[in-house]
Image: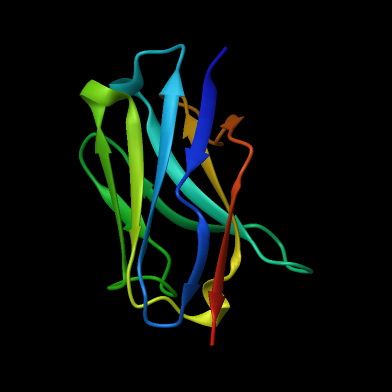
Length: 117
């Protein structure tokens, strides 16, 4: 059973930066795709970014501002968030997708990111 723990959330002014981390345990980390999702109050959860062993994906709303990366030696995935906007305010979740799976099946507890204007 994988265990994902996010950290790094907080309160930041618009234009500022935060780096989220997600530490994973319990599996061969490098074999799995990792993703960051977010959910704002009253809105559906949305995909922010994903990273596999060979590629990355970004939602249009964060492209050019956010960077996803991973350190397989540390079983950790990161989300560097720059030029933050108030609309980036949400709970951010880390998730893991098994090889060959269509969906992300393991989730962290989430970390709050609040961007003030």
